[in-house]
Each structure stands twice: as C-alpha cells, then as structure tokens.
Image 1 (cartoon, rainbow, N blue to C red):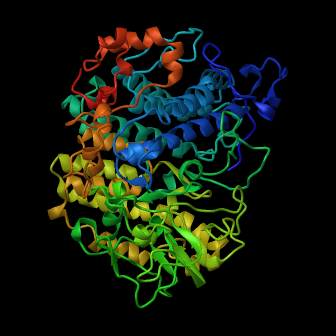
Image 2: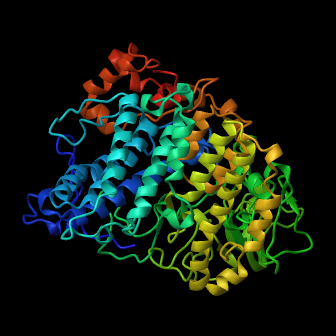
Image 3: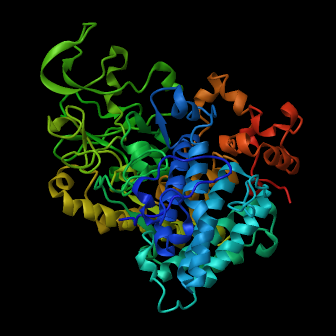
Length: 639
C-alpha cells in the first residue's frame, strides 16, 4: 500500500501534537494548518491509516487478556495483562490514534465529499467513523460520540446504548451513500482508498458485515426487534446475506515493507506507515509466545487427532538440528520437525499452570556454548546452537518466539530474524520464522468472509439449525485457510527457497485444506457453540472481536475449548485488586486525556452506569481499582 500525504489535525482543546513534518505540505500556510485545503481523497487514507492502527494496537492487550499469547516476564505491561493484572497500557494510544489521528478529519471529509457529490467517500467516511467508535465503545464503554470533534471543548459523553445506536445510524448512512452514483467530476474512490482499493461493492458488503457484527453483540438484551436494540437473529442473517460472499470480498490490507523515510507516522512512533501494525507491536519485539490454548486447538482440535494446516503457518519455527537425543514430546506437547529435520516448531506455553513463576520461558541465546552432563556451567562447543544460559531452564529452547525479520524497515535478507546476526548476514542456522499474522508484510483483516460464516454458524446454531450451522462453520474454516494462502503465495514467489525449506512460509495445499474441513472439524451431529467460537478465534487471529466474544459468553470455558482463567491469577494478589475473584476484565480505563481535560463530563457519565461506584473519590468512578470489571452496555442486561 501507499498512503497519500495528508493532514493531521489535533484536538485543539485538549492537547498539542508532535510536528506534522511534510504531511502538512498540503496546506497553504504551514504555520496555520487547516483541513479545508486538504481534498477528501487525501483525507481518507490518513483516516484509514490511524483507524487501522488504533484497532490493531488494541488487539495486543486483548491477545494477553484472552490467553492467546504471553510473554516470559511477569512484570511490565504484557506480563501483567497475561495474569489479569490490569494497567493503563495502550489505553491512551488507542484513543489518541483514533480520536486525534483519524477522528479529527471525519467532519471535513464528509462535508467536502458531500459538496462534491463524491458519495462513495461520504459512505466510507461514515463506515470508518462507525468502525472506530465501535472500537471505543468496545474497549472503554461510554465515550463522546455526537459531541466529538465539535467546537465544544468539553464534549459530553454518550451512554453505551446511545453510542451503539449512533454507530448503527452511521453504518446505515454509509451503505446508503455507497449505493449512490457519484458526480462524474468527483475523485473515484480508488484515488484515496487503500483498505478496499476503491471497490465500492466490497465496501457495501463490509458495511453489512459490520452491522451483523454489532447486532450479534446484543444477545444479553433479550430477543426482539433489532430496531429496539434487541437480539434479532433474522436481522443478523439478513445483513449477512448482503455481506461478504467469498474471500474476494474480504476487506484486507496487504502491507508493504519499504521503509520509505518520506512516509512515516507523525503522531508518536515515527515508524513507516506502510508496514503491518502488528509487526510494530509484536513481530519486531522479542519474547512473545503463543500459549498452549492456541497450540492445542491448532494441532488437535476437539481431540479429533488431525492437525490444522494453519498450524505450521501460525506457530513459529526455529532452525535446529534434530538428533537421536531430541525429545519427541515437550511439556506434554508434540514437537514437530520439518521433513529435512532442520526446522523445529514451537510448543505452547501452558497458562493453565504457573510455569512463568518458575522463570519460563527463558530467553533463547545463540552461540557456541553447551550444557554438559554433570557440569554446572556452560562449556565451549565446536558448533553453534540455540541454548538458554540458565541451566534450570535449559529445555526452554523448545519455545520459539514470535519475533520475525523483514527486508525493509528491518533491513534483513529475508523474512526471518537471525539471532546470530539479526539482519540475516550471519549463521543461517540461527533463524526464527515469526508467525503469519505479525510479519512486516503481513495482512490486516478488517472484515472477512470467514468472519461472516462464523457469525452465521453461531446464529443458526442458537436457532437449533445444526446442519445449516455446520455448513457455515466449514465454510468459515475453509475461507480462513484460503485467505491466508493469498499472502502465503506472495511470500512463496518472493522467497521461494525459504518457502521450500521452512514450513512457515509455503502455501497450504487444497487437498490438506479439504481433508481438514471434511475430517478435522467433527460433524453436524456433534457441533457445539464452543467449536464454532474456537474456530472463529483461530481464523480471526488478532482481533478485538475475540475479546467481545469472550465477554458475550462470560468467559465460559465450555465455549472456548481448552481455555482457562490464567493460573497465575490465583497466585498474584495484585491481579485481584483490578479483577476481584469471580469477575473478569470487561472494559479498559479511559485515556489519560479524558480524565485530565474532560474530568467533569467523565464523572457525570458514571451516574448512568449501574455498576459504577460514583461515591469513590469524589465521583472518580473510573479510577477505582476494579473498574476494569464493569460491563460495557452491550455486555450487560441494562436497558
């Protein structure tokens, strides 16, 4: 993708931002920037970039909360979230990148596009606005919506219900405008849109998927009419009929990794704007690991004994040398090797145990050292290998980090990261593959046919139509694999030798896909909501929807197969301060910008939240240590 240079607007009433550098060259007066001189087709890619980054940055804490990934350290933000000790980590980043980076441009985009009768831009503007505000509602609960980006320097909060309704109205407005015919003099959508590459039909289908996603969250509101914000299966299915019908309808961003210094984020991180945001927050960082919850469901889903073809693509690999002494099983999990015995796949870290309190997994080192039997210190070795310099954790080389490399920002020789020389000019035996989802040239799946299938399967199953649900469920798994293959084939073309030798990179065969779909998923007779939801989570990868689903089903262990509350929660008293016994993480604390600059309005909204303790600290309900357990509106029975 390539973003056009555009305009960064601040929230003038509450903060000043970093220098906008050359992104401001669209203005007539760089000392007094204003959005009126930025054309709507140049505002849109800016909005898309910051909205996508806000969402994907939010998926990082969610992956820890939901037990998909973990880190070796128990302290720090990631280590704390993995044991449900909540902090303000990412709360301000998500808020600022959406409200400031994207949101401050919505009104001008819609206004200028309306004046030009560029209805497709108007439609996309409404849809992305809804998409971002749904994100804010999902993670924070109540936030300013109707009063956001107005001249009011202390915007009034909307209730969660009001936010839900306003988002649905924006979605309907988006679909309506996308169906209109643009003025022939207007910029075509393709000149400013990189999410959908200007495909109007794809945007309309995404709008219906977004609406189905929202309506499906109303299951705690009782059955009724969707217009009354009740759970309405027929309305959800009707949306899906108009939503994505194949992987060709996926709203998917295929990222590049050019490290172009002229195209860098100016809001805070100063990184390239072309690459995958998940690479920035996970893929380029060390000591992030998949959990056994993910591992078991990829390698032996529901005990069916057939490995998922996606397992090799999602679970990281490390170069290694198989020997007669190499264990076949580690931590009760099967160790897999490539056919030539030169690549070893990770096992999952079991968060149902307190293994991290024992210092696991200990970071892997590369070099010519070895632990010899009977010795208590490392000895020199004639060959280089992966090892842990903590003898008690010497076997932890079996855990492979998600860290990956890249040829652009990272400046490496291929997509691997090399512990001998991180950019790949050293010993090729020190390579680690990373995971499909977090490579620099990976894919952001904004909305997919696979997700539509899983929503349909869930609704039909709840209606008692197990046969129809099973077909949709199979279609969802198949679509997930086929979607991944699009990117895997690109990597195969770019790095054929790497794809040939390392199982992480080559595409899945149609025969393997179909074998798994037909034989690895069970039957319509043994289908459960748990199987549907667990497969949905494997397909979505990193997504806020995973946390939404866990909250909708109240963290039910029968619904998320193999998942349990992290065992460390029981041995960490600090976890119980933010998430008391019997409760679960339900929302994030608001951004620091809100409690610093909009304190009165923040306190006022607490009076409309049943579980908020407005007697705490003179009305500061949002600052009570356990506020993280207050359900957002759609997660509650509140009218």
